[in-house]
Length: 313
Image (cartoon, rainbow, N blue to C red; front, side, top):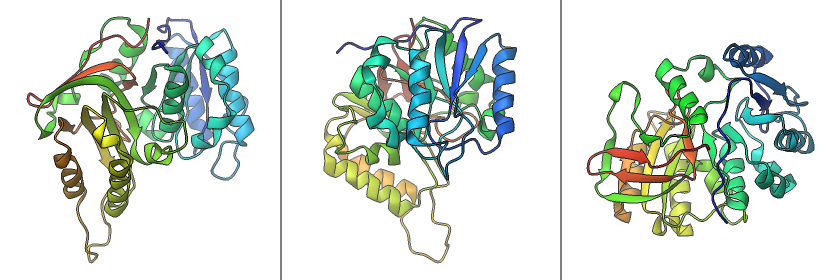
């Protein structure tokens, strides 16, 4: 199955806004997102259930999956942005018509809980999607200009992306030296682990493995890394790029614990492949948008990461 790239965004295009996981914390964020996108010259189509509340879900599974499929089916919608993560996209994976998505490739942006949906779509269709900001969160309202500019450049330009640089030229940390190349795949650690054994997780053979996380204590990070190890994924990948692991520490100072860094070093030093840490990607306002599925060169000896092709056509 060949790689699918969506068409680039043009001024005047319609962007669909949906909530495939949890509902927006505040509906005012939706209005802010609409105003922002319209100020840039885009039109906005809201999912019918974008603001629904069903416990920690934005409506029923059928409603959320329906919004997603309607956006992919609507010929006027050129891109689909998500309001937030939270929890819920794994519940949709067996409700989606992937043949419709493959016939209507479009820009799909999100991260965190969206990782499950993005990886399932890549597995079933080979569509490039975008691990990037969600448009009805406080993080989006605090995006820095360089981050914002990089986001729109990726979605609107069919030129090769090139070297990825952190905001303010902040350097990568080198855990394991070496050079490698492969398609960059991954996202939120807990979402990746949740797909093991389901049939929706793509093969990570010859890939550059991207990981980020939030709010998981070190022993939980340990457990998930060990599950990746036992599943054999670490034996298939060509390199690792670690984004931000936000709030992943033991809050009880009296409790014995390994640190996050100790866990990462323990697992990743053993696999003897290039590893870079500190990519500005994850649950942060300085988030760099990463297109999942594009060919990427990793030079951990020099501390560089380069995406060698465009994300859109």
